Length: 311
Ligand SMILES: [Zn+2]
Ligand SMILES: [Zn+2]
Image 1 (cartoon, protein in one colour):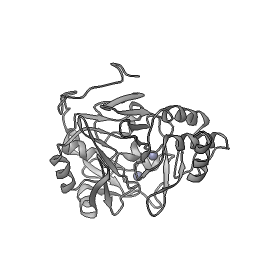
Image 2 (tube, protein in one colour):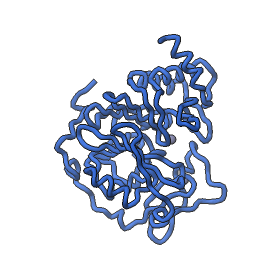
Image 3 (cartoon, rainbow, N blue to C red):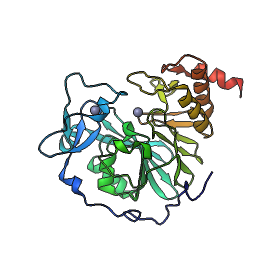
Image 4 (cartoon, helix red, strand yellow):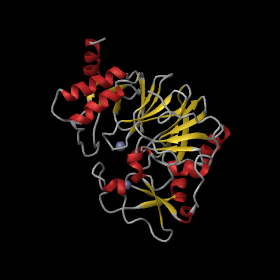
């Protein structure tokens, strides 16, 4: 389904053209990263935030002994940002040592320029220079708050024309400015479309690259990997840390939306795996619907056997 309400050609659009930038009053504020989960907040320069909304949310764990935050200069001194080609046309960015949840950012080459999806916790000066050398970002988007990482920093530094997050999740986007709130289906580049799955978060959205068969699943899936990077199990959850399952209706909705997308490589905000296909995910959902609610991983060989049944 395409149409004027859900399909957008961004060709020719330049930074700041879609919506004039507001005053950058927030630059008077400091950015603080939660030491427990890595979530960035802008807050007053003279005092850190009183709490972290992500750690306080039901899906995550509170820190053991109170909140603590790192400033930009502290994170910059602490981590190294690295990047590599994950698959042809997709660059992976991450930080060592792991900060917070340890999100990874993906940068896709598209017919309209670079599209960033999710973000690493921090982008060093070298990482930002690499993105600028490659023409900067045309579009920046994320599945949900656990994949935001240093997204605010990419907007401040690179000012992509489009910054898109599901409209139902705007409450989590205080550290940056969403220029293109996404509905249920939003084409962000030719053949590359954001689909709202809901479930984990109301506005949770996945990105599908139809031509290359790539599925950026956000936290709609958790992929267990072996030491060689091969998928050993899949799971789906409302809350990973708290192990809260998705509801039956959420699973059925996921089956309908994700089952319509063809892919054979899956990228979460934390890892990627080749050989995980649409049919594995449909088999996972069918397995979960046939059993009592659970967020436990289902081994790939169990899913592969189900795939074989209707292959
Ligand atoms: Zn936190
Ligand atoms: Zn999540």
